Each structure stands twice: as structure tokens, then as C-alpha cells.
Image (tube, rainbow, N blue to C red; front, top):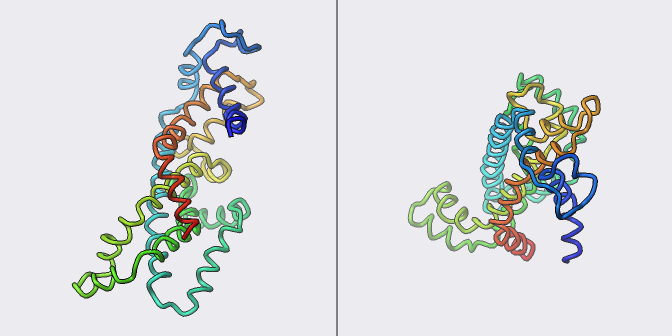
Length: 257
């Protein structure tokens, strides 16, 4: 496990090395090489990273909120409502997990263009609002909640939305946290779809802005790439370290269920 962790961390360690050392010291690994933070300053000034961070945060929050709301209602309906063909509906939902989002880029591009949402944050986020993975996780969790709790609430006059808000969502909180971490990580690092649909700096996320540093016509500046990579990856690393226990436990419980 330690060896696997070191191999996984190797690209991050290399990026950190080139980011905190001047260009003259990047050709070798010397413990006595001078340190500098100038690469971070140069990277921040070379592109509107402040705008990229705001775009990415807004984009991720928009996607995660809609995913959780839609998945919660869909999972509850699949578990507690007697739907004709409910098993077939759930199978069709799971079918989405087998289709790569990249396969649908052309169709999504045409649809977003027809809606007039090209080069907007809503246009980038819209194809990801419905998540089969979230529906699956929440359905498995909701199935494990005793039905007597809901029946008792109905006898007391509680509505469906009240039951969902006061019983199901609080009991599924660890699963919400785990899925939110997965969703944030995926969409924070998503590159191809934002590159296709975003044309201006006003909606460009971090991943698309980061690739500007590796443009061959401008020369590859590894110091700036390393500094920019660390700045874009650090929020995700901190987020995972803070919530790693809830993350692991939630998926273990979902798997057992």
C-alpha cells in the first residue's frame, strides 16, 4: 500500500519540486537547491486564475446541487412508489453508467446550441444534472430505511416532502457526503466537455485555463505548469483529507446494502 501510494503521489511530488525551485535547479534533484515561490506568482499573473476559480466553484456547486435534488426524488420514487415497470426504469437509469459522457459530446453540443446556452455555465452543467450513480447510491440507502418510520409519519399527517426532508435525507447524510466528494472531484477535473462548449474567459474553468500553459507554440514552461497544477489540485486534496473517513465508510455501507 505504501509503494502504491508513493507511485500515485509521484506526479504530485514532481509538480511540487518544479513549482518551488527556480528553472536552473529543475534539471536535477538536489536537497540544497534554492527554494522560491515566484513560480506561483508568475502562474497566477499569467492567466486570470481568480476568474477560473470562481467559474469552477460555481459550476461544481450548480451540478452537485441539481444532482442531489433530482437523485433524491428519483430514488425515493423508485423505492416507495409502486411504479409499473419500476424495475425496467431502474435498469434504464443504470444503463447510463455504461455510456461514456464523451460519446454524447456531439449530441449534447447540438442540444445546448439549440437551447442558446453555448458559452455559459448552465450550458456546461446541464448534461450532468441527472446522475445514475447518485440515484443508485440513494436508492440502496433508502431501501434500508424501515418502512414503519414513514408509515408512522403518514399517520401523524406528514406529507411526502416532509418525510423525505426529516427522515430519509438525514439518515442518508453520509451517502450524500460521499457522492458530493466524487461529483466535485470529477467535475473539478473535467476537461473535454468544457473545452468544447466554453469559448470565453468568463465561463472557462480551471482545467481549460490550465492547458494554456502547455501550448507548444508558446513553449512548455514546466515551472508554471507545476505551480498552476498545485494551485488547482490543492482544494481537492484538502477536501478529501478532511472527509476521507466519511467517504470510505459511506461506500462500504452502500456496497453492503
